[in-house]
Structure formats: structure tokens, C-alpha cells
Image (cartoon, rainbow, N blue to C red; front, side, top):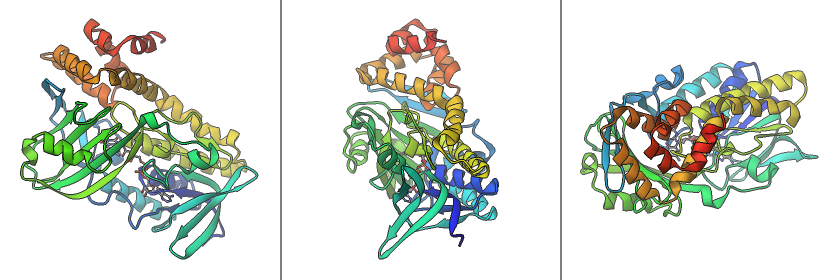
Length: 398
Ligand SMILES: Cc1cc2nc3c(=O)[nH]c(=O)nc-3n(C[C@H](O)[C@H](O)[C@H](O)COP(=O)(O)OP(=O)(O)OC[C@H]3O[C@@H](n4cnc5c(N)ncnc54)[C@H](O)[C@@H]3O)c2cc1C
């Protein structure tokens, strides 16, 4: 084992694996530390992503969608939509981990990072602790990819920025993997404050007989919300289905951190708040931002300068690719949070019988083709009114 690593990645989710893959591909000596006994989700898990997603994501497709059913509180729409696919998250993690290993990177499981090693405000490595074992591990750059799902996560936020997420934007979620679901090629999304205050619930088809059902919202019970949703809302494909794996956690919907690097450290993925607020999508951002973080870390080490200033290249690059997405997502999310049920019903009424606008709305909700779908929708006067002045202002600025 090297005495000093080039890049230490804390967290073995998508962002961490993507960072470890790109840093090891660039020739860095990379160590990835994962607190759990396994990488990836506890069992198969599905994520809805754009069919424009890169080749890696396409290798993990579980289901190509034909339609998406949108359920507003008092109206329902079935949208012909073939731009989305459900990918097997575990498969993506396997592919990434294999490449890390192929490039000579190391992955340690059951290795929780307890804290950052700091010297004069500069991050010099991490401290890990598990059971009776504890160790300081030194590295040139630490990538915080611990996600935003629990007490152990968000090292950069808590230890470098010395902050927490804004509670009013911290959504909880529950998700089940369910067996014995009847097979359908559609995804369903439910917008209803009675079921998911400040958020939404969903059902995605996975592979044969498997489906994912989840809920994400503000002020929901982090354990009971999904059972309540499934109890209150009859979903035909799940009538005889039962959960075999559950996950719970939190998603910061306030938009990304205003700063994602410090001296000797970068934050990527959920830990950096790189989550599209309107729908909670984050996979594509985690993959790409992790990749940029790994590359910038190795370049900076090669140049012998891991200062915040040098590492801020990471911040600039990801913001130039995605900064606008998060800005749009946040403003629309905030606008739709006020009188949410009425607005979702009104939107469903305007979209009824207008397939082009329906697809634009699904694109906007999922963060695909964002700027153009928002423009298409805002051309309609009724929709502009529903979205409100802040959203219109954002688009008139450019
Ligand atoms: C219920 C739900 C559904 C979602 N659905 C979608 C979707 O359909 N499409 C989409 O694009 N996005 C979706 N997202 C968002 C997407 O999953 C996240 O944006 C993405 O997983 C973030 O990846 P990450 O690697 O940053 O964090 P995570 O996936 O949370 O990974 C963080 C990893 O770090 C580990 N860790 C934490 N603390 C420590 C520590 N101290 N030391 C070592 N390891 C640590 C964790 O165990 C975990 O393995 C969803 C999110 C949720 C919560």
C-alpha cells in the first residue's frame, strides 16, 4: 500500500466511482473508501435517466420507456414519451468499479471516513474508523463523494464550509424494490400534496416482475411515507407486489453549493448538492461531475499545486456545463411549491390533448433538453402564468 495516495475518494456511490475511475485513468494512485460492506444500492435499483445519457449508462439499461403517466391531484395524463430509460444503478456501479480496478485503483469496503485530516486549513487526507480499527490516510487531494444521505455524509460541507443543508429544502425519501409487480413499460409520477408534500411519488418498471416505488417530499415521515402512499393510492401493477429491499435518506433540493472546492479537497455528486431540484435527478450530474473532479485532481497534483485556486477549475467546468440547469430547476421548483396542487391540476388541464407540450413538460421535469423544453412551454400564455414571474424573468435575462 502506498504511504501517500494521490487521490482519496470518500464514498463509493456513482460520483465517487466516477471520480476514482477518471483519476485512476489519468494515472493517479487512487484509493476509494466506502462505509458500507458493498458498493451500489442494497439490491437492484432503478433510476430514470434521459435516453441521451452516455454510453456507460446505456450499458445498464433495464427498461426503455414508452410512456409516462402523470397524476395531478384531480387529473391524469398519459404522455407518449420515449426519451427516458430506467437504468440498473447497481450495474453502473459494477462497470465503474471494474474500470477503477483495471486502472490500478483500490477500493476498501467497510471503511467509513470519520473526518478529514486538516493541517492549517488544508485537507491532507482522511481519518477512518470502523469497530476497533482506526487509521489516518494521507493523500494529495480528497474527493468528498459521500452523498447527502445521512449523518456520515457531506464532509466538505460540514468540515470545510462548516455548514449544514437548509432544512426547508431538505427532502426525505423512501424507496422500495418490489417483486411480483405486473409488467408495464410506463413510469408513473404522482404530484399530490396529500401523498407527497413538497415532492412527488413514483413507480418505475425494472426488469421482469420487478418495480421500484418511491416517494420524495418535505415534511414526510422518513420511514412511513411510502407505506402511506401505497396504502392511500391504489396502483394496479403493484396490487400483488411486495417490497424486498428498502432505502431511505435525504436529498438537498436547494441547488449546488456555491463553492465545491477547498485547499486539497473537491466535493462531487450529492455531497455538492448537484441534484436537479425539480425532480431530484442526480445520476447524470454525479457521473459527469465525478469524472471532472478526478481529472482536475490529477492534473493539479501533476502540477504540484492542490490549492483551492488551482482546484477551482473543477468548479468552473461543471458550472459551465450544468449551472444553468440547476438555476432553472430551482426557480421552477420554488414556483411550483406554492399552491402546488392547484398548479399541477391547472398544468394538466392545459397540457391535455397537446402531446408536444406534454413531452416538453416531462423533459423539463426530468431536466432533459432543459432550456428548449422550458422555452417551448413558456410560449404558452397559460403555462407562463402558472410558472409565474420569476421563471419568466429567468428566461428573459438571456
Ligand atoms: C430515492 C431516490 C431516487 C432517485 N432517483 C433518481 C433517478 O431516477 N434518476 C436520477 O438521475 N437520479 C435519481 N436520484 C438521485 C441520485 O441517486 C443521486 O443524485 C446520486 O445517487 C448521487 O450519487 P452520489 O454518488 O453523490 O451519492 P450516493 O449515491 O448517496 O453515494 C454516496 C456513497 O458514499 C458512502 N458514504 C457516505 N458517507 C461516507 C463516509 N463517511 N465514508 C465512506 N463512505 C461514505 C455511502 O454509503 C454511499 O455509498 C435519486 C435519489 C434518491 C434518493
